[in-house]
Image 1: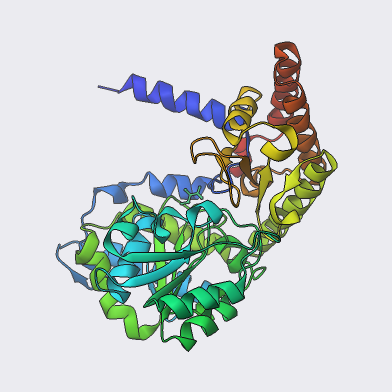
Image 2: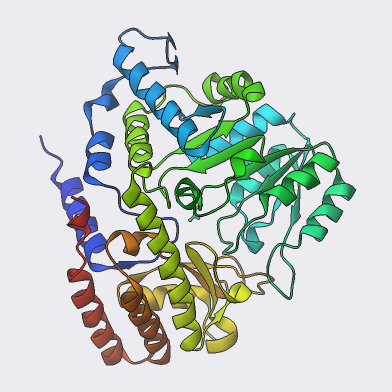
Length: 409
Ligand code: DSN
């Protein structure tokens, strides 16, 4: 019997995805072929192990699929070894920690409140519970990573592993500098490139693979693939890393998702992918400028990538939480986010994080992002005016109708 309720809910979510302006920096819209492959019969197959080394029969086609995914990923990023089995970015990071560290070892990563990620040592996360994490933040004036400070902390703490990469940091990260700091103290370097992987694949951001021992990523952000994780590493760590993914932390790989990852990598090798990523960057720059013109303070003053952090509290005396809710009411979707040295709690925050990847996929260019910046300011000015908010919402609906999600199909 058909599960009507779930189909109804999917329909509602489909409408929401069409109607809203999607500004969550880590989200995107996959292509029809990625959607189809993710929902394909490959979901029926068990394939514990690796290509040609499985614990189940009948894996000959699955082996070809997974090998292709590995080869494509290595080609894109010029890497020595790839593992496409991690179910998520979190599991990719966990597998690297298990490979590089013993429980209790020291690690240095970016503080979550300064732009890092939960798995970079948050005390409630497995990373902070299993390892002795220390953190670096950003410079109070520039709000950017201060590499001299990172070096100083690294020399004092002497971690076995340094983690570079972030989930809410809008500037270039100097991987060469991180590699130099790590080398000087005999530490390994891991780069979590999840947010900027698509920009790197397109050759528009520096490639960390040449500097880092391990590079982890998700496949669903700027890379525009299915929800999942992947790891790249130097050959010397390949065997140990593979063992730490399976059987270390995972059982059967999700081969339907791995096939969709392979399609994602195929798409990332096409020339229109580069054009798309260029537009992501152009849109982020113009969005940042337009928000500044509308009176907002942009953390670090600008962006080098696909996202911006906006301080709503200091200029408009509205928390990130209230801004997120207000924008939800006019069908603009984003997330509240701590800003450097935030005085508010993580569930409240002083700012929002905005990203351009999803709406760029739908065809937004400079004029649309300039308009969105105006609407965000108008909504804040009219936060208690229900009628004015209703008018903006109608305008949003008119605009999103012109940029259908089905452009991907
Ligand atoms: N939760 C993701 C993000 O939104 O950036 C990172 O994993």
